[in-house]
Amino acid sequence: MSSSATSPLAPATGTATRRSRTAVIALCWGLVLLDGIDTFIYGSVLPKMLGGHSLGLTPDVAGTIGSYANFGMLLGTILSGMASNWIGRRVTVFVSVVIFTLATLGTGWSQSSGQFGFFRFVCGFGLGALLPIAISYGMEFTSRGRRALATGVIMTAHQTGGALAPLIALWLVDDHGWRTAFIASALPALILLPAAFKLLPESPTNLLTRGRRADAELLAAAYGTELAEPKASGGDKLDALKNLFRHGQWSTTLCFWLTSFAGLLLVYGVGQWLPKIMVELGYDTGDSLLFSTFLNVGGICGMLIAGRTADRIGPRKVVIAWFLLTAVFVYLMGVHMSVGILYAVVFFAGLLLFSGQTMVYATVGTHHNDEDRPTALGWVSGMGRFGAIFGPWIGGALIEAGNADIGFAMYACAALFGALMMALAALTIRARSAARH
Image (tube, rainbow, N blue to C red):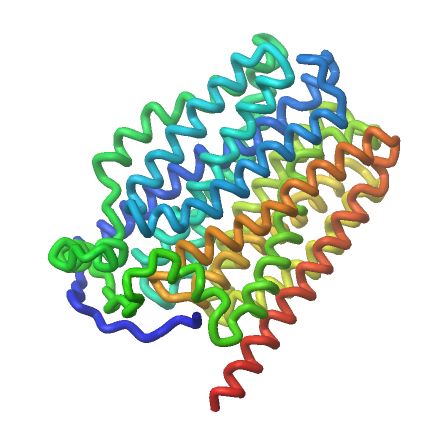
């Protein structure tokens, strides 16, 4: 359902409420930082694990385990949006962080590839559950004209985690072993989670839809947010899911899902296998890990640039342009050139790649109303996880077959497909709008 006008039940303004909203964004940023570290730490320690034949891993098995984690993310993202509508977004956030933190610790203590794969699956479930809810928080506690920027700001935490993960690996793995990297990446949650438990509010919209009007209006007043009257749904708990397909919406939903498929194939395929592919192409191991850091630093810059641009011209246009440019830079990553120039290419690939996928979330979030947004984001991220499963698998299969040199070309094709799908989504939206008028 396209975004509808709201009727502010308890509007409030002023410095105090702005600070309160900033605190919510900051807490979401910190939680997504944990998500980013845990997501990318696997790819950062993978070259060392494969080089030492740890747990009997081969490139093919490692790619399969990466797919386990992403299948867990698929389930987590699909279920989290609906669960948050039923039990509250705040509880869903806390449960997801506890799950992926405990699973990351379990990964570090694994004694076999089977245990390792199981804990990566559970970790993925928790990681996947957190992200759509954090983005929903950011959009709800931000003014309408800055929602794409808020999404980009929160997602810079994911890329900051991706930039920190290789540095954690460089710091710990050589001297203390790969297990310490997983354990160290889980420890910050022990500090941040209690603060979030104390300071993170429930969603006012969620409270209203669950019949707690007085609490919802108090929170909306305290944080200066707009509160929309809930739709009459007859108490149907699956109403938000059904709205993704009603009134001809199914075609747009399908295009959004396929765009997310392409974007997450890129994010997790390139993110996980970049260090190993670079080693296979003849680059030094240290450079290969730093390529991951440059990729994610580029992603941080891209989130801010894409967010501000999307708020001005619309996130759909940004997604199309970013994915087209991503195809160019990802292809160039596989071309032999000097290391200095390659660092620049990797930086710009990261700038475009990660923020392009993030603007898919911004597109979906702005397209749907407050009530349907968590479910819509959960499903677009969840369906995209099929790409996240396929991306690591195809990288492992290519390396196992000795064809690492064509990996970046295949990932570039995925970017072109993503641009095409978002263009088709824009056409379906325009067609429905024209039909209504």
